[in-house]
Length: 418
Ligand code: TYM
Image (cartoon, rainbow, N blue to C red; front, side):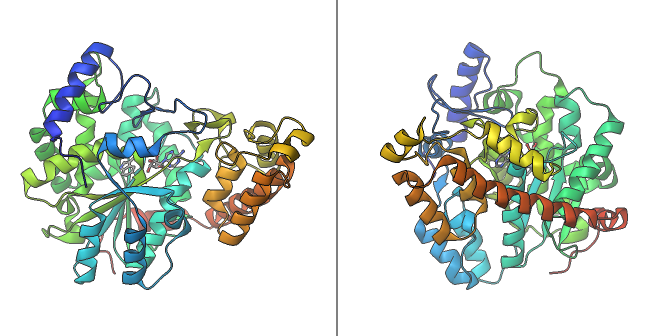
């Protein structure tokens, strides 16, 4: 159940708070709470974000065993390990989407990326790997937004550099294996000017949201440029199917958005606006964060190269970064480790294995052996290094095959075939 507070209650509370603190907090966080916004992720504890607390603060619903078994039953398929392990842990209106699917009614997927560095990191793969699984499993169209305009507004970067970064990121995304017949990828700078319906929806959304509301949701202040203040409408617009007339015509098709929970503020706003425009509210599936190498207090972020494993890293770089930086939950000496065991909750190598080691039995064995002290940190790291080296090198091989022609196909506005 979503919380009973209305959207305006939350917004008003935040405006007061933000005026007082001029902070980026987007909800009713207390001072000692974790910070989770589209720009900052900071946990107050070494164990990382308190996701239970976040569920009630954000007012979203927990992904529970019932939802997972409903998905498995309807699709006749075992749930993806990111879902089974509750790495995707929160949702909004997923049951509504499943009701549609059950009745053979259409829906579509929408996700995105803010192109900020030539190379994406392993954390960025999470929503795309999962979205690919959703696309395959439900056989639905997918739109992927590349918010080069967002990065222009937030970073000190010129158009030419952004264009290059956007192309590089799009190729990385395509290499995740999306079906060209069912996927449309667009950059805001290139696409919006070509599509009046998209722009009209942006302006419709802008008309429904006040300055006070965006201040409350995003923590914008009086000295933020007006581009930032109106940007949320750009990220909201793909949630309305009529923004893509060449795919959906004028049909009001419901939308499902997989992303990490940092993007939720954009879609809380969108969910408030959609019914006013007589559209269904977009549904969401939220993931936890793939943590920084240094520990779960922050998410892996491209702006700190030592916190991240990039998709361009060599096998050696991966090995060195994990060995040097991956925060260990093991004992300080071998004797202490053998006596007291390791702490999987804070051990980054174990946390990474939860995201990328698909074999449930092997993961469980590692968890047991590490917690009992039988398995040493060095061995855990060795196992992780091999998995990440394989993942990244396979990704690099697939990416080499993505030519400009293939990229052009994905980015051409066209009818999708499902
Ligand atoms: P961006 O580029 O910051 O992130 C792209 C996607 O990756 C998720 N993400 C992570 N997931 C797990 N662990 C991490 N450490 C991690 N870091 C980032 C983000 O939640 C996101 O899903 N404004 C957006 C671009 C965007 C978008 C969207 C994202 C436009 N439309 C619709 C999701 C859905 C951005 O800058 O994402």
